[in-house]
Picture 1 (tube, rainbow, N blue to C red):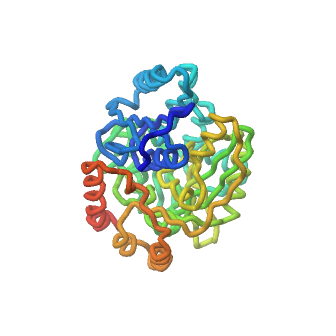
Picture 2 (picture 1 turned 90 degrees about the horizontal axis):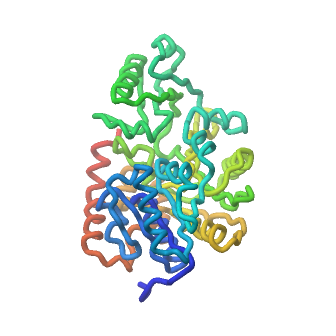
Length: 404
């Protein structure tokens, strides 16, 4: 552990206290020796009690007014420094984007404009843009609260139901709520739609062809695009194990770095066409039936598992800081293959991953390229480390309960 943190010209702030936030703070610390301010809704998670983080609980952080006030309060404490603010989820980056003009003059918000942000966070509009600019997407049907059940006759099963507006969906919790719903019949589809709309959610729903394949069919493509439109980082991560809790479905627990030029080229072209800048992550699924990769979503931020980049030799936070703080554009860089991000114990990784991936996982451990970034020698808080160890210990129970 360094004896003290460096006093630099910038102060990083992150909204949200999950794995994504912790990894980002760690990357900032490793490169710049800086301590990051993290605002989170709860006194838990990997950021709470971290040695490299100044943590503040803000229970209603998802309120625009409250969020703006807390960021401006931090900025007022550092009037001679630049405060750069990041969000760890769609909701927070949306707040930052639409309120960018309400922050103090020494605050930098490194996100796209709210109009483009809203289009990309809407799955319906993302699919429209994807089709226009050459990305392959699954066949989809859009419905709303007024749709007639007869309109669902064209659906094939199994199918996936997911909200067009994921942020709004999660703001209306109900028993059995999930990020996405797999349905096997028209009756199950109708009941699922009714349950979602009965919760108070009133935006559109996407009903989509289900692409067969377990966790190992999932991929992410993480990118960093400079302000001039050049994508400097574009790296594939192969998801070997996902979270299977109802609200955690789709969150990656194990990602290993790969190179798939087909995906990376398509992502670069798309980002260029839509005039995107900043960090992004595409969710992609491989369909073994036709041999194609299908783009499911674009997140307008870096993702929770983005640390596979760092383990593969790329510090994406450095790209942000060098461009936005020091006005220096770093060169394009490719991730080294075979670095594995994992937030589950080895026994869970080996037991619940696909049989075809077990040797890959074993080799990563043997080469000491399988790393859980949440545990570090400089983290001295007994309470924090005990909570994380307990969570690791309970991972096996969670997978036994929720794995299909």
